[in-house]
Length: 430
Image (cartoon, rainbow, N blue to C red; front, side):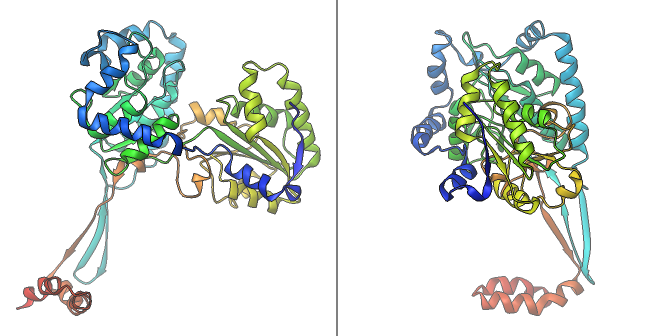
């Protein structure tokens, strides 16, 4: 495998389109099968999940689905004290950042004499967090989903995560859930976990919204239950774009590039730079480093399928490409990163300067790592306190205030063929 720079102007339309489409999650092939599982859970509840997880425990019962206090205590025995300490530091930063996002509980303005209009902020009652699990551990995803909901004021936050054999949840996930003060956590993954939270079962409570990353089956299940509950933005494999000028550090960029395709074979990494020299230096470092990488098959797949080093004719072209790509993670390594930032319209989370690698945001700086992928940053934002609140409006009118709008409302209501709407106003002046 050899990575080489390419000029944006030299890309064929097909290759350009392939770069933009990258690892977008295609759920069409599995959607119908997933939907049938979801509907089975809706109609039959825990029985469907118990049948599925007999592969992990032959005599499974409903009691095996929920994590107990004893299991959390046991989990702490398998997680080193330094990791617990780091989880707590990360949690403090996440809480601090998300508290700053909270809006006023209420505001109002006087539209005109006698007409007061405003908006109040109210948290959702219940939220469900999907936490990937099984053979891998993602304690950071617990912090990133549970804590913003808690900060928003959600009354009940529950989580589901796939169990291992014996119906045992990953200890790192359980410790992180305890640090985040998650109210309840269940050992159910995939479409079974998503559907159980969407419809409610004998064991798992129904929630108002489901958030959190997962594989394509989780994404398909979330799409299938959308409308029954709210969901966050669709999420696919991890991706990052690095935007750099000639001041970029080739060593930093090369390792940042590789760190983003470490996730899985469908991850994507792109460097866009105005410097041909930097592009060549980065490629040389990546190619050299590749020989010593662990799990080489994952890196090779990502590098061959979705990763590119591109040279732009100028910064204007580089920024246009960056905005069209709309990356989940965007690193800006230019001489004046804050000036460049002013020209960025679409990105999930932005990392400025040579000392802000993406893993800092993944774990500990306080910003959220649940982010839109596959160009969805053009219309979605990363997870935040806003995802867990509603903003109902209100109005108060005096009789004089209503009188000032009487003719306008009556005229428009009658024009729309709704005479009783008009009468609701006229009655108050008879």
